[in-house]
Amino acid sequence: MKKRKLNIAVTGLNAIDSPGPGVSVIRALREAASFDVGIIGLSYESLEPGIYMHDLVDRTYSIPYPSAGIDTLLSRIEYIHDKEKLDVIIPNFDAELYPFIKLEPKLKTMGIHMFLPTLHQFEERHKVNLNDFGKKYNISVPKSKVIYDLNTIHSLPSEFSFPMIVKGKFYDASIAYSIEQVKSYFNKISAKWGLPIIIQEFIHGTEFNVTGLGDGKGNTIGAVPMRKQYITDKGKAWGGITISDEKMLDMTRKFLKNTKWRGGFELELMKNKDGELYLLEINPRLPAWIYLAVGVGQNIPEALVNLAMGEKVLPFTTYDVGKMFIRYSWDMIVDRAKFEQISIYGEL
Amino acid sequence: MKLRKNVAVSEAGLLFNPVTGESYSINPIGVEILNLIRDEKNPAQISRVILDKYSTDQATFEKDYHDFISILEHHNLLESHEETKA
Image (cartoon, rainbow over the protein chains, first blue to last red):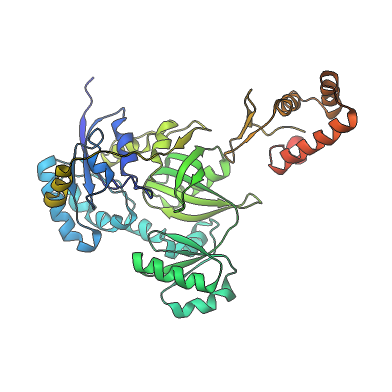
């Protein structure tokens, strides 16, 4: 039987040392059993490697940074839609989710579907609200404090012991062992990602991640936990292995049931030496290692697209434990003309 | 004493704990002892098997055996007494 074909636009094509999830999501969609795909890449920078991966991405269009405003983004999407007849958009960056969530009703009237968290879910799980989130949903989280200026830093040692984590509102986190280091990371991270900065209690232990998909009604459609085996100096997993930990899966199901989370997500968890789990962060999108979930039997991006298209999706019930992903980098040889094409015309 | 459920030991000596994702490499005698533990042999029975098979003495075996068990316990690879009773 001929499968229907969906045109799906995907962001996060920066398959670099701190990779975006786009390329992994596209690999998953190319392997979807329930539909065929045309893949439209959406890029922010001309050197995002996914732009040049023509075996995965059919065409790429540059889109404006979120700071350019929602109207600018909408007008660019209208242009791309006119040419490509998009069925689905999968945004993969935290920073672009706000404008896409805002645009979701408008895009739906144009026939473009998404499956994103609600604005309330997106805001509630934000790092700056983690303490309240933990209290509300009875989930253990490390103590954290939001700071807006350097003057408040001197009072931190009375509330937190060293080391402490200094986090950016979207990305970046560093471990500080002294007030001087807190100041230095505050300046560095706020210059890049803006204010506020989050100070978080350091939990000694082992870091785990869970990726999954909630249907927006409290049900778990998919969930795969992973232990990072090889971590880069940016804290990114360069290798990982699927594990079977009921406590972690219970916490995930509780998170989805209580919040009625809609869309893909990644939970960052820390397990201390007593086996207690702490939720460090909720990333409101699929992670760069999402292809591991596909490799162990849960094609979460495919399920997300089907939910976006209003299809009934049955939950995944199993996955292979003990399967690993090992990431690698690959040098592509690219004609300058292609680089010029995307840089000057914003299309390739 | 029991090895935790789901802990996988390959013939080549790679032990994988699916709950933590950690793996360990174990030498052939370690694998043999783990298989005996799996078969629910008690320490006296394990001692007899190893002493019959290898040229070592009781005292050396006991010391090495207890070291090995301590390492397994340290890495949380054995069921606790409460879990065993349950």
